[in-house]
Length: 167
Image (cartoon, rainbow, N blue to C red):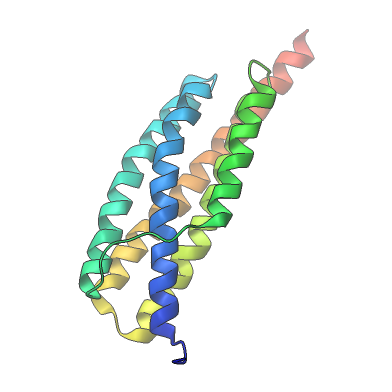
């Protein structure tokens, strides 16, 4: 059996995040439909559009390294998304639903940030110069989305607190 290399690990991780992004793309419209606030709905739909662009960039990275764009089942993202579906079911109609959706979305973002940060570092080490900018573009979008979700979550929590205080 041939010894595995960093190139092999880079490709496996690229397949992993490609699969994850495609699963996330399917989940975002469900999250948007479930969200109770207009800001939450808009945030999930905006991220759906960004995710389409991220998938296109990943396809370009596969092309640059001469490999077919194929995903590899990512059990981590399946678990995170399943938790999000559970929140939708368990908290439907409750004041806590949007907070739960935001929390679930941030778990997804943190997973993606970890993957893209690692892929960027490995691309640099492996000399995949053209891939670095594509991976970094995805990384920066994920970081920005995480920050937007934090602001949305904080705003939602403050609004809920004010509603309770005035009752």
